[in-house]
Image 1: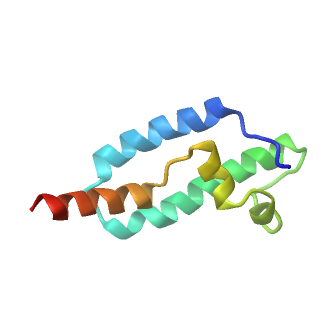
Image 2: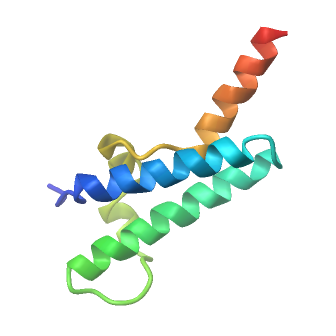
Length: 93
């Protein structure tokens, strides 16, 4: 079983991500997927440090804390939010 990231960390990250998304949602659409990847990598680095590891998250860390793990914790995805916003705009027209 995975050790859980403290929920306040995810809540604070989500608050920042929502603000950034609201500001940049009309920007270049393909920027959000790499940004999601970078954010999850930074969170993996935090987890790695909590487990007495060092350096950036890499290698087995992606199996240890897969993307689904962060989704279960409630981390929002900017790419999915962008896709939903784009679909909502299409349906509105």
